[in-house]
Image 1 (cartoon, rainbow, N blue to C red):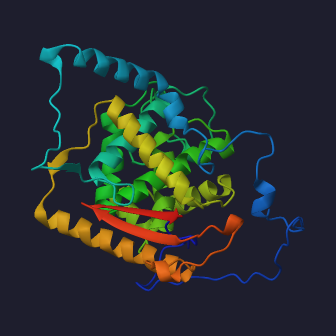
Image 2 (cartoon, rainbow, N blue to C red):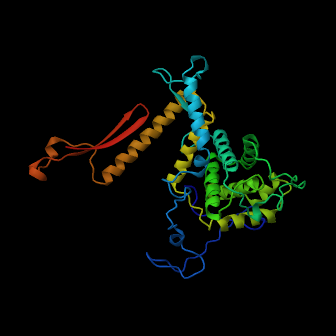
Image 3 (cartoon, rainbow, N blue to C red):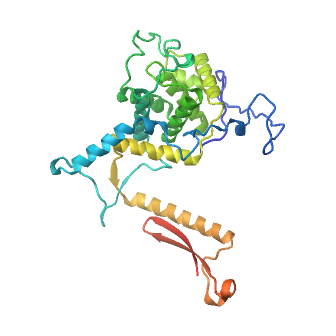
Length: 355
């Protein structure tokens, strides 16, 4: 999921060419072996206290879903009650024989605007339903202001609204031209930070935590990452040194664990859609056009060919005749293995049949 190696720069670039420093690995740990250096091996960092990390375990519930549980339940109840009243029932576009409605957001290509809105909403519930007020200095906006004007005296008293969070995140994503996938990775890193560092996101630190997560996610996910100095052009009053220190401490608090499994990414995507549905942040549906249908059919054909070739490599035949059936196995029964690849409309089905 994205790049597995991240090149983090701690100084302002002098040229337009980017250099990647590769550190050679002298010793390789074998299974069951414990590293003797100060840097922990990834196997040594695995939690053994029984608590699952949602940013690494695809089966663990995301933190923002847990903290927005009440809102999700209320949203479902409200929607159910609306459906019982004809006048208030929302209009829903339904597919028919002549028209198919699809939204333009998928797990592999999420809609940018709606994804950013959902991530901002998840951050909103993180702040609103936090358990305590645990703080780390590097994220305190009073100690490290993002503007020359600083912050007001009551900067840590009032929770930001969803619109305020969305505006901040959208500004960074638009200016840096980041992708929707990067927004999902940002949320993963944010929750990993809260889990690892026992930190609470709150009115006094949410901007700098989000900024650090976006900074890191853009470098890990995007091949052409945004430099720290580029963020200083977006946030005019912040210095490169401050950005470098924010990135360094963020990485240390993550224990340099920036890997995001594809299953975890998918879990966060679908949980964000669940959150959006409960808060009436619908993904707009549009009629399936001829051009898009042709693209989907082409993708379907490519996947069908891919599955067929993989099956042939593994010894399965795409077709077989009765003359090639060999008797054997239990009780002299004939066994035939077919790989059937059927394209029905735009959906590819694959199955293996044994007779």
